[in-house]
Image 1 (tube, rainbow, N blue to C red):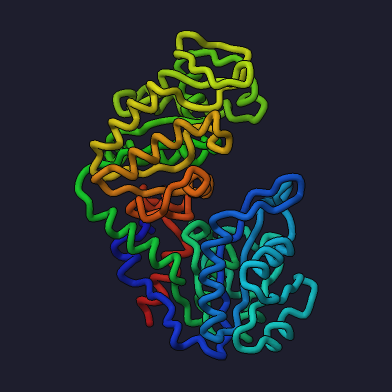
Image 2: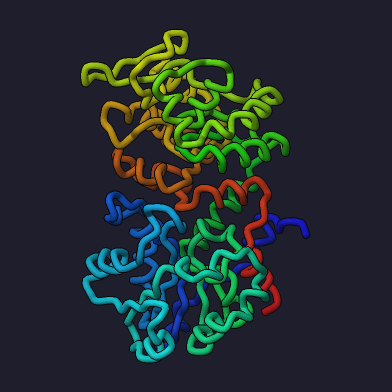
Length: 411
């Protein structure tokens, strides 16, 4: 079955009517997934964004049951949502209930009063959560049915999880009146505007998740949707390695992380579409506590590379400013350090001053906005989604959105 088009999805998905939620149990699927350092949760733009939605439901006297995940099994960030609860309580200025999966969650949901919120434990603590199944298959799960039996509405408010056919994303949709939340609806309206713009996209791809970026990059190039793709961060450095350039210490680090396993596919894409891909022409290192920029011909070096250089930033800025639409996913350098925030700042400055449609996507990129002093209003749209955003643009299926659209169309 082919993927639904953005236009069709937006047309059929309905936003929740807050006038109907008073004294009703609302199952709210959000995305609180954030970075974890030494076991401690780092408050992210996603938490801030979804806090606003939770507060809006509370202000409208709904009984809010929050569903969310954190991390993946086997990774250091696979932790309980108890820290998320504490952060949200601090932001809300009121207590929030918490329920583990071996507690009596049905009774806890029933005991909610209007204007109260309850967070259920990390959905990925449930073995069946990440099974990629249809909404009808997930809706037959006894736990999903028990929670649905004491609820009135299901609201999906996170584009960033909408590409998953996971139980908490699609399983409640056949059982309850289901809608998009305000964050998701704003995302869809912005993407509908993007889809109406004629011409190809210019993409800025960075960060340290090359597996996702490489697959999306190939799809957009094959479909003819990408005009230019500007590479930075770990992905840009991998592209340099694919061209036969030795980086030195950074190359060893990328190898240890297993990222060089993706080189064969990246090489294949670069050979087919070399005229559309722009790679860094200089990189920045730290030497004697100072930033130093090196041309590619001066590599390899013992120092780690942390950013694109000034020449690369200028080239990328010119491409961005002349684009009809530009999408950035992933920072092009280690923006957390003032020494190496230069490249990401220059890219964002170019996007903010561009007359074209400017779309920011991905958690790290959104974090960079705030860290570097940009306002969301300086861009056409700032999305909390990364991979899901690129998948939707490239025509991939987003199971959560399609299930929601089909359900709303039937109603």
